[in-house]
Image (spheres, rainbow, N blue to C red):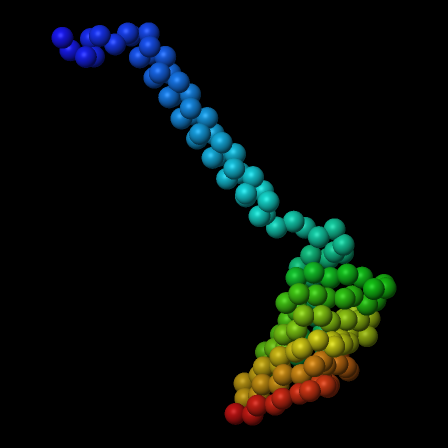
Length: 149
């Protein structure tokens, strides 16, 4: 006689259902774990940030300097602390740094963090800078290195 004919159908059905239920539980548990990982790895917004993705411009008679950053906090009604990937960009140059205090009223900026200035033929790395006179005057200070091409 055949071995499969001797197996009790109730026992076979029971084991089949048990395997199916275990398989479904395994799939759902994996899905829950993946969902929890996505939630934990999602970037959380910082509650101590006043401005997300701030954008400003310094305007004078001859040019505009556009300022962008990842976050900003108000120091007072005129001054804003810009942090993370702060970039000053005009048609002639760009400056990249991590922290800047920007005065909206006077249209000045001051940084005491490592800065990188790039233009067509010049690269300057410094420990900080000041932008005065609505962008007409940029002063680099600290340990500064100039590369002229």
